[in-house]
Image (cartoon, rainbow, N blue to C red):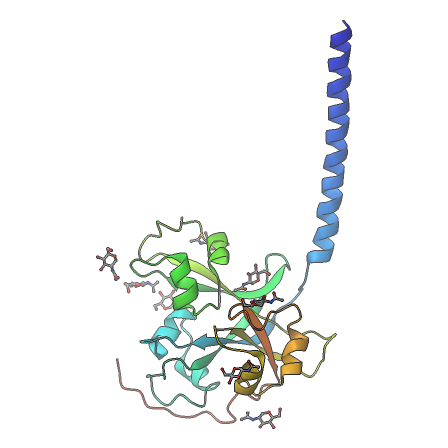
Length: 236
Ligand SMILES: *[C@@H]1O[C@H](CO)[C@@H](O)[C@H](O)[C@H]1NC(C)=O
Ligand SMILES: *[C@@H]1O[C@H](CO)[C@@H](O)[C@H](O)[C@H]1NC(C)=O
Ligand SMILES: *[C@@H]1O[C@H](CO)[C@@H](O)[C@H](O)[C@H]1NC(C)=O
Ligand SMILES: *[C@@H]1O[C@H](CO)[C@@H](O)[C@H](O)[C@H]1NC(C)=O
Ligand SMILES: *[C@@H]1O[C@H](CO)[C@@H](O)[C@H](O)[C@H]1NC(C)=O
Ligand SMILES: *[C@@H]1O[C@H](CO)[C@@H](O)[C@H](O)[C@H]1NC(C)=O
Ligand SMILES: *[C@@H]1O[C@H](CO)[C@@H](O)[C@H](O)[C@H]1NC(C)=O
Ligand SMILES: *[C@@H]1O[C@H](CO)[C@@H](O)[C@H](O)[C@H]1NC(C)=O
């Protein structure tokens, strides 16, 4: 009798506690939904700084970045004069910056056609030159890492920025720049024709000596060529 009552009290308290924690969880959920929403709209244009590994060329960039046309690539890259691109250089690839995951972050989902023996790590670090990472690929694709079927299409998310009006309204175009080992802040400022100070302002919390991770490099559109060039390509 006595123990029955204890059990009854026990479960009643548990139900009460459970109900309270559900309410708290719902409140946390609603609250966090309001505060973590970090975008409403995206923007039409962002650039991905794609590091050229051996054997990558314009046809490959076209495949990796949703069939982007050669002229769209050439518009943003004065240095390219043929389908052959200098290894270890970087190419700016224009893309649309979307507001993803119900406003959680800015990025673009590219469709990638899997090659034989691809793993998420290889796709992130080599094929996309660290513009994405393994964790995002595992999150966005249903296949297990050790068993990605050949020739299926995967979701590859590349992050981007549309600026931050608390920093400045002068910059409306951002390069998503994966840092490489050996690069430092002054070097990146030099090669992107910006200043270290500006890069730091747009990338608080970033460890510039880490040799990995993404940076957002601000610009006003000066990366774009003034006039369309005509470059002749031999058919591959
Ligand atoms: C790219 O082109 C191929 C061949 O025409 C097509 O099958 C594929 O769906 C296109 N990919 C995208 C993302 O538009
Ligand atoms: C994939 O891996 C298999 C077994 O390791 C190998 O025989 C094959 O040549 C590889 N294919 C490519 C395209 O690398
Ligand atoms: C892109 O942003 C998401 C969400 O903030 C983050 O989880 C991911 O690590 C970022 N991607 C890269 C390559 O840093
Ligand atoms: C890619 O994302 C879409 C939309 O979220 C999803 O329907 C699809 O299953 C994903 N593809 C893979 C391979 O998981
Ligand atoms: C994916 O690649 C394979 C082999 O290169 C090709 O046959 C197939 O058409 C490609 N699929 C798409 C959708 O591009
Ligand atoms: C930054 O990197 C450049 C090129 O790799 C190097 O010459 C320079 O000494 C480095 N600067 C610092 C402060 O480490
Ligand atoms: C570098 O930036 C400055 C001002 O921000 C601009 O005047 C100059 O033309 C740029 N140089 C190159 C090579 O883009
Ligand atoms: C930044 O990264 C470097 C290299 O990985 C590491 O040695 C250093 O401790 C890091 N600094 C901070 C503040 O995390």
